[in-house]
Image 1 (tube, rainbow, N blue to C red):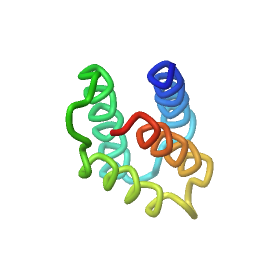
Image 2 (cartoon, one colour; image 1 turned 135 degrees about the vertical axis):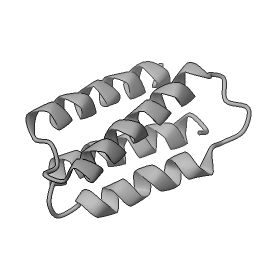
Image 3 (cartoon, rainbow, N blue to C red; image 1 turned 30 degrees about the vertical axis):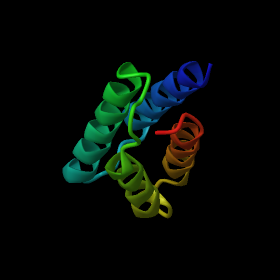
Amino acid sequence: MPANHLQQQLEELHKQLAQNPPENEEDRESLVLLARDIELQLAAQPVTTPDASLIDGVNLAVERFEVSHPTLAGSLRNIMQSLANMGI
């Protein structure tokens, strides 16, 4: 069930990126890569060892977009919480 919830959150993130992307190409690319990494981790279920770099990446993205894209940052926070709930 948590994996389904995370998948829905990732779909929401993709929608937000399509509707209101960051102005900077580097920021857009980093979010696309982060989403891809999360999807790869999700596909690798069950997780044998938590990926701290993935959580760190999501956390850094939240901090980066907190002011400029608060809705996007909120979605990233939800994704981070789902990952934590799944033990990732």
